[in-house]
Amino acid sequence: QREWLEDRLRASRATWKVIACDQPLGLVVGDGPARFEAVANGNGPPLGRELEIASLLRSLRDRRVRNLVWVTGDVHYAAAHHYEPERARFKEFHPFWEFVAGPLHAGTFGPNALDDTFGPEVRFRGIPADLKPNRPPSDGLQFFGMGRIDAKTEVLTVSLHNLAGEPVFRVNLEPEP
Image (tube, rainbow, N blue to C red; front, side):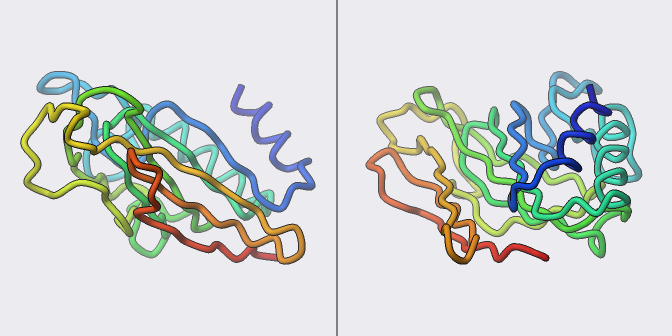
C-alpha cells in the first residue's frame, strides 16, 4: 500500500497532495501505559508505526514530491501543525502541514502531547491547555476544516471553524515549485 501511495503521489500532476489519515502524526494518543492508538509514540527516533511514516516521507523527499498536506482527526479538538526537518529527530523529509479537526458531535478533550520525531510545531490549537476532559458538545468546542485552492495562484487556504461555522484559524499556503 505504501508503495502504491508513493507511486501515485509521484505521478500526480496536482499542485497539492492531500493525505487524509484517521490519526494524527505528531500527537501522542495513548491507549494504556505503554500502548498507542496513533502514529506517535513519544519523543525520539522513529519507532513502531513511525517507521512506516518515516519511510513514506523519505521516499517522497527523494522523489521530489512537494506541497504535501495531511488532514487528520480523532483527538477531539482542532489544531494546525507545521512539520520541519530542522526541528525533528528524523530529518529526511520536506516540510509539510497537518490540520486536525473534530469531533463533529462528541465530547471534547485534550490537548495531546507533541512527539518530536517529525518536528511538529503547534501553530493553532482550538482548546485551552487546561481544558477539563470530556466536555459536552454544548460547550461549543466542535470543529471542522475547509480547504480552498485559488485557480490562478494555486494558493491553498485552509481554515478551521467552530460549531457556529466561524473561522477560528486560517492560513494561506504558497505552493513550492
